[in-house]
Image (cartoon, rainbow, N blue to C red; front, top):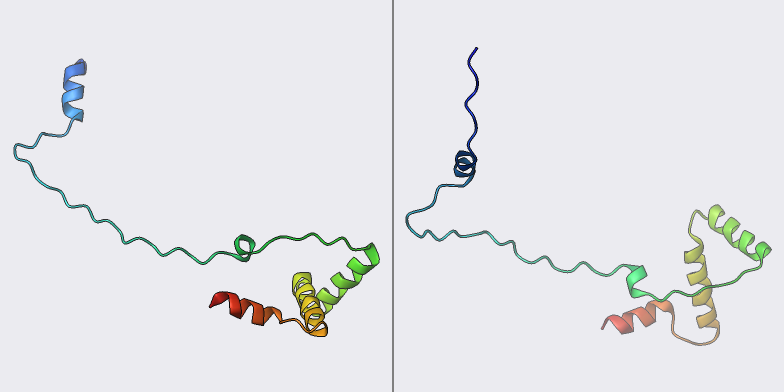
Length: 101
């Protein structure tokens, strides 16, 4: 069996480099159109507020959310809407409409 030829560093480099062009060609690249920014999530738009609830109050709120198959957050917003209505203030929907204009 014959030995494989010895590899020469110059031959390896020459084989790895692409052939040079003799004339200057202009290559056109397809640039994708910029994507519109997605609307911000609630977490990005809103401000966070902590509420400390006694364990029985928390448990009752959690049980209501489970029974109604909704989230505790939605029930808290509903409670705020009722408070605003009781005090004669604008509802959450009215506030959001005014800000979106």
